[in-house]
Image (tube, rainbow, N blue to C red; front, side, top):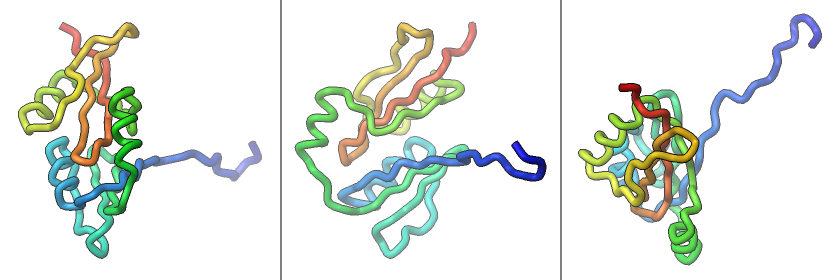
Length: 131
């Protein structure tokens, strides 16, 4: 690489979920620890947690596709978490909809799935605490 040139690197990547009710979705993701600013024009909001973003857009979607994705455990997003057991306990205590409980994987991690009010499935996983 030539001197003085900055190597390009991706610094963030955020999923955008189409939702039926923006306020309902914001309330749900707050249970997972996200914070939100004021929505733009009442239809778009960006949630943040630990430097990561999730974009929510109030817009129509295909209900049959959502049912198919849930039935076949097709994930809409996956997140890595340090302290997976504590995060799972926080999510369950806050009333998140858990569709797959915290489970050991064959590759040495633990994960669980949540489903939001619009049917989006998010996996959270990480290395178990030592001890």
